[in-house]
Image (cartoon, rainbow, N blue to C red; front, top):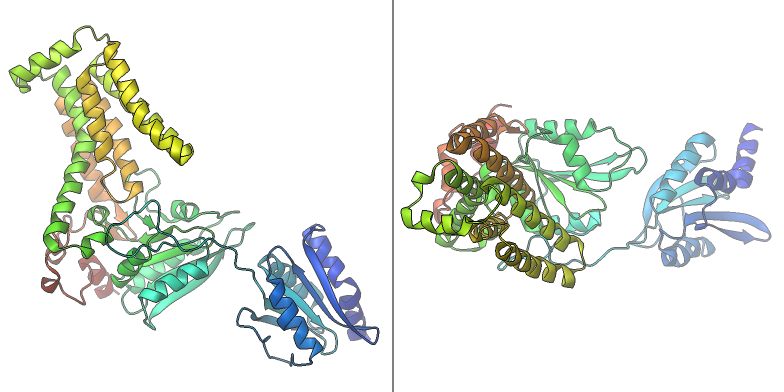
Length: 488
């Protein structure tokens, strides 16, 4: 009697209960099949998220042809069973799972003849095509980039690593969004302690929403208030594949092309996948250019302020006379000039990024030139300041990782303030504090300043220089990864 009542409840109230749970959405559809006036099949789905062709031509057609047998998936590679419930199962559990399945782009198929409810994957794949990453352009190497579809991103990684040890651990994070997240690693290469640490931090996330990988990054990073990133993000599948083969862990988040990689060290932010597509001497030269650009972007404005304000004796006589002539009539001190131009430069850069591409590019270039020239002619700043700010602005873009470039921008302002108040002594104190901070940082248990501190001799083959490939260990892992594997 109870079972008959349960069956009648499913037949009469199942669709209505789902409607109530979802708030009567306009895209909720219920399709039914009748045989001799008796309802035999009911198919419920959200038409905005499913492939209707799969439902019409494979699922419902399978019932009309009586080819949909128990335990057998529909005749389509695009669909497949997720879970099957019997009418005797608890009704509340059935309704809860059905609602979650519908929101994920599946359909709930009620088979009254066999007294079962099947949850079937009929998700419509709506995504942009694979394109070159706009934030990580390359001259030589693959031009494929990740998309917003996590399954597409998995395929791009598998395309490069055809290895049975490649693992994808699935999680759902976000009480409201239920965002799918994948932790990716090579089981035979990644240290167990690293995998446990990443999994533990991901499992500890408590939040209502995850809309981009940056949400996850803020929860699992080592230091909240450090200007330096302890993870990196990339849209390039070749970079993810290379880092996985180095024993690292990647985190993919559905809905974004940016994949997180951990752990990361300070010197790894100066390398790029393109370094390994060039000859060793060219790659070494480019790395030194990046290192020089880092020091230029961080220290040149502060050194100018310190020299012109406190230490004029350090400037050659002819240059000092030229700078003095330029500053004649300028009403502001050097520190105010530098800060003013740096802030204006940052405003122009941000405006260029937010505006339409064609207009934004013209605004960035023309705006900087016109404003700089006008400010010099008006006597508000000296011409040397325009040169200093332009050099530092250009060198800030040389480092291949955007998040690390943001760190340089914050450091530049800090050192300018120190130089304006204490001169070279302030710069020296700031540099010592910076080195101490870098040495104290860790990225998932890995010292951030590796291989300088602690020193790992084998890793110097691929830090400041990149030795020719025959001289490198073809199966070697980074020294800090090997150390983590030994400690298990």
